[in-house]
Image (cartoon, rainbow, N blue to C red):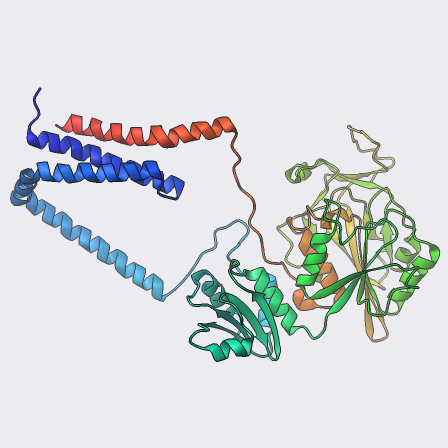
Length: 512
């Protein structure tokens, strides 16, 4: 079989187009133009150019015949579609509207940001100093501006306006500075990545706060440590509180002879040893004087705080909560990780409905007498109906079953918030039957962190900070084995380009 000039042009043109398509497919998968993609692109271009040269006469005949009129109609239709798309694009640009389809609503400003910016009483300015604008950061600032007329944003080229840079105290390209009256907070210097919502909102909190309040963590009884970065530590809590403009420090009730006067709130996080009677008395005096405390107690411990709890109408159970719903498996645990989806009516848990918090190894904490009205109490956290209590968990115990003679059936309360008037002050107490929910691995997950920080905000009476905070993206990275990675490599390198080329050759052969 002998091919003429036009058939050769058609064949190599088909091969060239197939190579170009294969190059485009590889580029879309890999996200960058690697060597193989470049070879396919160049070779495809050469083949297509050669096909045009060899088949030039056939191309001229095609445009001069009757089919050219049909081609003209097709061209007009194509131009019309492009024009319509252009108009739609222009309208979309003039009337900007975005939709956040991420699971965590990563590109929607959090409730905390809305509360803080919406409550501004005077102008606040965020200034970014650089040579070129940053579209991502500018879009974020546009969302902030929509929340309050007092929020201002300006982009400044320090080379063109050095006096503005000097006034704000900017010293490097890329500086982002938040100014509120005479107060200024520097977010960034140099070549680091642009600050996000959490950074900006944290800086706004700092410049708008009248004073820094002290959160005091009690030590001396095996409590969680603010400097422990392990899975049992509270370094994440320490960093989170500082972002909300709180200062943190540790205290020892015996050494300090009570709660120091500069402590705005006290946190007791998972004591393992017993408190001395005089320490319990010191805590009681602090609360009776209008103080505020967050107490987190784990199962299988007895810190001897029952007298304090009784005076606040709180009952801490000597038990362990078991969740038979299977929800705990979602968080890498089993039935001893109760999951809470039912939250009490309190500012602490406002907006939590529809989400979850989980508590690795918890005990019940409930209202002792629900007929009492003073102090005012609310149960914050309720487990599912498929939960129950057991007296204790034996080492290596595999089978856990419900005993109606000794155990309670759910829903069960895991936390209580209580408040009462002390003169012109509001004394407040929060007790939760678990401290591990706020430890480093868990405080950033689900509503765990919001629960802890909101409890502190409520104790401090910083109502504008009580909210759902900026989100972080869920890690959905796919980890492949070596064999899977090799198989994917061959699919990407050989199979997909080969399939495209084979399809092109086959179609050409059928049509010739």
